[in-house]
Image (cartoon, rainbow, N blue to C red):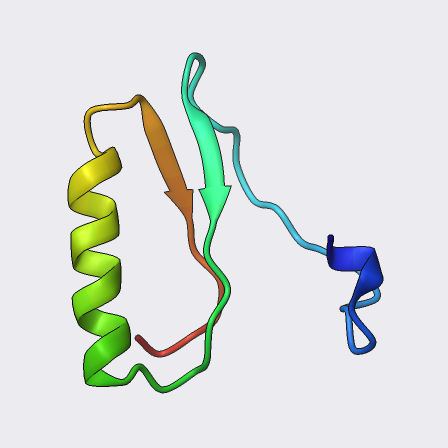
Length: 62
């Protein structure tokens, strides 16, 4: 999906290794989180926390 974006980054940077057996997901949003976004992400992560998933962070403030 990322290559389909008009303003996709030229490169992606990774530091370190992902833990074995974990399934990584990355969540892309705005740099400044809205109240709705905060509520949504709390509910979403609460639902997936038992599914052996690790979230990957970007450079957003929120």
